[in-house]
Image 1 (cartoon, rainbow, N blue to C red):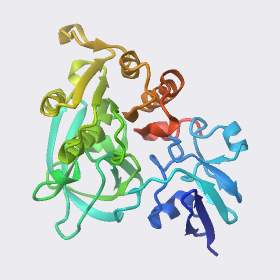
Image 2 (tube, rainbow, N blue to C red):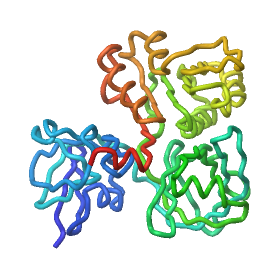
Image 3 (cartoon, helix red, strand yellow):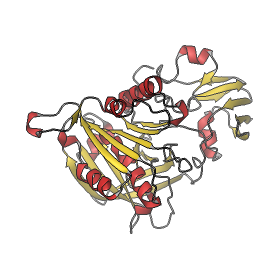
Image 4 (cartoon, rainbow, N blue to C red):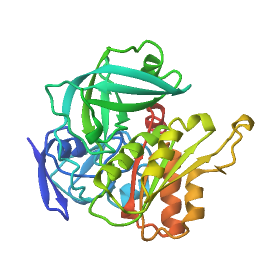
Length: 346
């Protein structure tokens, strides 16, 4: 028997099947709820349960603490309704706009701009019209049924002909998927994927200045956002901060410099946390989110789009809101949770 979930204040309702999570049912019904990892690790989907009862599956304490749960907060990505429910959640216009497709993709090119980063172009089937928002991600479906998520690094208008998505993949030694990518994967190999997923994309109806914040390969969806901004002719002021360890990790530094040179409203600020002596680095050093705070002690009128390592995203969210007055609902993030992160404190 299906249960009914109503999302307020949008007053949208959808049916949830027995033993199905609230989020998977919402995605199937094209209801725009905020979400990121879908695994109880990032906390992006956190919402308030106004009526009804749910059972939570395994999730991380940092995504939903016991105190938050006691106060009526839930994670729709791992909450299974036991009764009809009413939930208070931010509506994300456009999150359910495009059909989620399961499709084969073919490796077109593999490049290694850094020793531990692969930039892969995956050709899409000509028979399917794959659409997405710049900033969203796809999931690769591995042979054993497990999944790995990667953001599109090219905006939709730059799919090219033949259509292909660009992905930036960091090698996690011992990782089932990335060991394969950095070992056996070759051009023309076929991989199955599904998407688009995620609520990380530009809020184009706003005129607020933007902070674009990336660490490591979190640069991928930020790059897609910049391409989208340029395509739309956006004039909103934006600063792109890219934090990496050493200069070699800024694997698309020239691209970022060129984008800033081509867009009068965009500034680029690379920040290295551990520059090597041979880098000859004279730029900024330290933690990337602290560089933002140094430049913008008042973020009360801004939007922030943050993507990368969970520790960076969490630190930025906490400090930007507490120290710089950023409105909570103007922090948009995609936390790159690895498999190790997802199962860190269950």
